[in-house]
Each structure stands twice: as C-alpha cells, then as structure tokens.
Image 1 (spheres, rainbow, N blue to C red):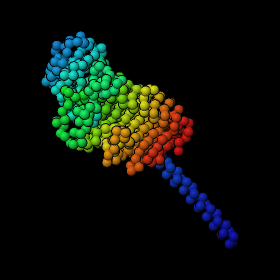
Image 2 (image 1 turned 120 degrees about the horizontal axis):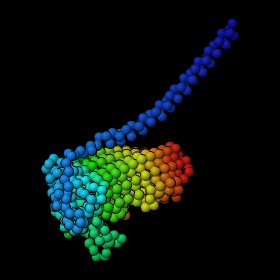
Image 3 (image 1 turned 180 degrees about the vertical axis):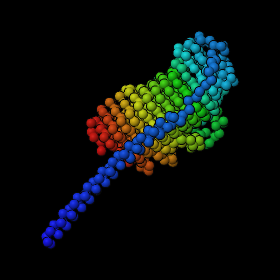
Image 4 (image 1 turned 90 degrees about the vertical axis):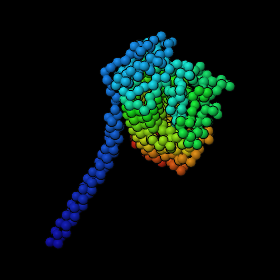
Length: 485
C-alpha cells in the first residue's frame, strides 16, 4: 500500500514538473514574441511618424489666375533685362490675391526675383531664366546668410522674405550663369577661375570679418557686405517663409548653395533637378527649418547633395532653432561630397531626419550618409533613420561621422557635440570605397547607439574605423561578406 502511495506521488510530481516546464517555455516564447513584436511596433511607429510629417506639410494652393510676364513687357531674347517685367507681374499677381506668374518658352534675362505671398512662379517647358552677370543688379543688400551666419549681402537670385504660400513650379530651367568668369573665382580656388592677386572670400574684409562679427554678437543689420566684398549670393532662399513648394524645375550654374530654406516651416521640394558643379554648390540645405519634404529629386552637385544645417557657432546658439522633421525620399544622388549630410553648420542641432527609398551612385560621390561637426560648432544630431537605400559607388565611406571636422583650421572650442540614435536598415552597397563605417567621436562625448540592420556592403578596403563610439549594433549585416557582430 505504501509502495502504491509513493508511486502515485512520484508520478504526480513528474506531471507537475513537466507542466511547469511547458508553461515556462510558453512564457519564454511569449516574451520572445513580445520582444520581436515590440521591435516591429517601434519600427512601424518611426516610419508612421515620417508619414505624419509628410501629411502635415501644407502644399500651397493658388487662385486660378494667370499673369504672363510677356504681358508686362518681358522679351525672350536672352539679352534684354526683364527685371522690371518680373517685378510688375509678381506685384500684380500679389495685389489681386494671388495666382500664377507664367514664364513662357524662351530665354529671359533678369536680375534677382523677389517672390510675394500667394504667388506661384511657373516656368513652362522650354523656358529658361538667365540671371544677370552684373553684380550691381543684386543690390541693395538684403537679410540673408552665408555658411550659417546671417548678414546683409547681395540678394539671392530668387528670394522670399517672410512670405506665406509661395511656389516655384514647371518644367523650365533657372540658369544662374555662374562660371569661372563670374562669381566662382571669389571662392579662391584656381580650378574655379581664381588667379593670384584677385580678391576672394578668405580676404580679411570678407569671411574673417563676418566670423568676427558672429563671435562678437554684432547685430545682423550691422553686418553689411555686398558691394566691395566677395561673398557669393545663394540661388534660391525662402527666408522665414511658410508653405513653400518648389516643384519640377531645374537649377544649374549656381553661384553658391542652390536651395536654402532658412527659418522656414512646411517646405516641399519635389521633382527638382539640381545639376550644378561649382564651388559650394550644395543641392538643398534646409537650415533652422522644420517639416520639410525632399522627394523625387535628382542631385548632381559640386558639393553636398543634401546638407541639413542649423547655424554656425554663436549664430546657431543665438537663433537656437533646430532643423527637424525632415523627410527625404525617392531621390537620386550622383556627384557630391555627400549624399545626405548633417553639418557642419549645426550649432542649433538636427533631429528627426528620415531617408528612404533613395539611390546614390557615382565615382565622384564621397560618402552616402555623413555627419560633421566639431567643438566650435557643438550642437547635436539625433534620431536619424535611413531605410531602403541602394548605393552603387562611394569613394570614402558609406557612413561617416566626424566630430573633429576642420581641426586643421583651428576649429576647436568648448562646445562638445552630441551624436546618437543613428539607424541604417535595408541598405545595399555595391562598391563601398575606402571604409564601410568611419566614425571619429570624442572621448568626452562618444557617438551613441548606431544601428545597422539588414545591411550589405561590398568591396571596401577597410571594414570599419571607429574611435570613441559605443559598440555598433549589428543585425543581419555583412561587410565584405563578413558577418558583423
């Protein structure tokens, strides 16, 4: 009897233990599933946020009224200066409550074009706007910016100041007519036409003077440059504008940066071609701007294709407006110093940048994704998401993060930069150049939380060079066919 009782107790205990193990396995499985689901939820919420940003951006609408510049005296001979005709057509459109200022087929020479609220400047197919080579045409000076520092300078070629609901649309071309004989020599480089003894931007009265004013906190209206100075104008600058659309047009031969929305909100750059190989010919540089969508564009440039900025040194800290909520999608990047770049003018910080469905491919493209700053700039870069990126060829690195940018020019200070939360997912690179990953952080402020998921990088000389950064999080990632852990 005792034996029967003992046997029954033994089997009962085994059954309980077996049941307990099964329940424990179920719990572990559920926890594992929960972790995977949680990761999926987080990933989905990230790209849902990108969709929400796109949905929140206002595309300006215009009354159905047309104003042909030829009705205001414009002549399409490529020689007659049509500045007055553009000004009159835009003024008439604005005063009537808005509409479309139309540039028909033909070549139209002009000085700077200043847009007004509720005006859509529309270039018909075959229309080319040629900007004057006469520097006096870009005076009087206006409130603008140069390499992250505000000043009074030559007017941008296309300019809008504190306007709302503006657009530049169509299939025509804006030709800045900058060349080795016009504007470009001021950069100081021999390959852009500068000759020894010619005035240039590095002369004491130019950039050095502007930067001293920046350091000293001189009011912007007292930073007067323009005539007698050699600081090139921007091509297109919406300054403190809201609801901006730039669609379909082509920009070429820019004096300096091409598309520069500064302190602006709700900006769309869609289907634009930038084909300009001059000095500092960045394609699109949002600065102190938020809720920006750059989509379906082609960038073939002499500098960065897209560079997100937020002020240089004291100016950035004075303005203190981060660039944020920027979505870049379905774009093609060819020549350039970088595909999508943050910096180096970055003192007010950059966050919430989403890059998806882009293609980068050129033997003259130096990096795919780049972040550059130093301890004079300081600033922060955080929450950068890159997904579904195809890279054919880059020269230096697929991802480059440098917190020592410009150190050979004594660009060291007391403002430690912070870089964290960088995500690359579903990235394929055919020819990765010198490095797969190149990170140079700071011992006092290491680069944090860099993530590679489903990334394949082929044909690099060196897999990675990483200094002063947390361990990179790799998931299903191969570089030179080596599984990264």
